Length: 242
Image 1 (cartoon, rainbow, N blue to C red):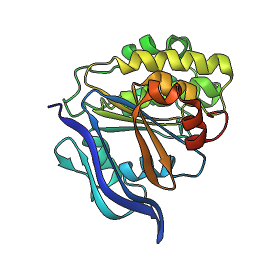
Image 2: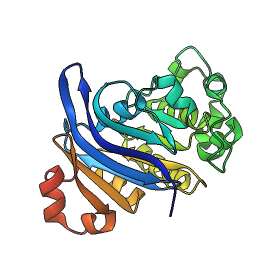
Image 3: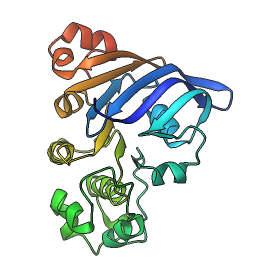
């Protein structure tokens, strides 16, 4: 049986006394890639924030491998193998691309087979290699997104959490990023949870999809089956599929 890289059970969480996630649970196997989609405001970003320890966990369990993460501070969760690409990107504006990558470098947990370096990030995102001496505030939105992903990889995580990486990007950049994500999906030992508003990108990225509604997982199954059932897709996430 495949070892679980990440497992949530009975998670109830939110901000202060306000509950956003209700009795939520799912698991990712080691090296598995899963997409998470849903309408705006259903709790997708809150879910990633909860996994990273940025919300109030009222009940439930969050495990990374065999480590109980529920009561750990965010920085300790990162050390335990979680990598996080926030929706806001949050690159260091005054540091160069190389410096952004260097400050994020960590040995990782040892559970992933690949060891990431700046050279590996530049191989994944050749555009960043050309901009290696440019500061974060000199990059385009797409380049900042690539850098944010690269910076998370430099921590050599066992699980990579990505929050809507294509949001606000031009279609040509979205396609570039989607190709890079598919290459990243093949990285040995790396489990990926991709939150994505663009349903087409999400369902093409992974063979398994999760759909959230009102703080719960309401679909956990085949991406291809969901993509092929337009009526169900529209019912779950709205007309147009994001």
